[in-house]
Length: 203
Image (cartoon, rainbow, N blue to C red; front, side):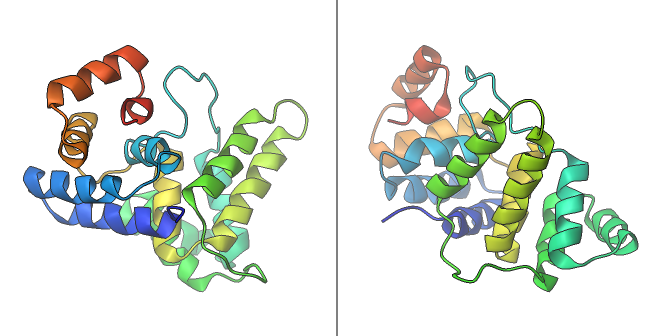
């Protein structure tokens, strides 16, 4: 079964809710253990606020202003509310979570947003260059937000901003991978050095 953005977001909330490194490692290990080979690299990158491997020079290039514009259109919030909600949290992801509760734009057939769907959409946004690229990125973002629950929107925006703020660094992720697959931590770290990507080293 394909991994969904909602499952990913729920795991992120669990990670954020505990200060215990041991508990964080256990939560992540249990999550990663249940992922397919296709979803595992994506989840590992997303957990560290990345969409693409470090050696992939592309960037999604969806700015704060683009995110705010998309939230404004999707939710109907005015500039005053957008600003107040952002200042309330000091975090655009948390602001998106609150604002999306008033979402006015939805899709006719609401289907779960998978990590593969998310990657395909962001890959499309990053690959478009030249005239119309900015408009294309905004359309992609609006399409994703229209599919998102408040919690999904929170972590979609956090990934796009490159700021997960859940207390999980690459070192803890490596420890979780070692626990999940019964490997030595040294081997996991060596694999990461060879492929230069936490996502590929997970395989």
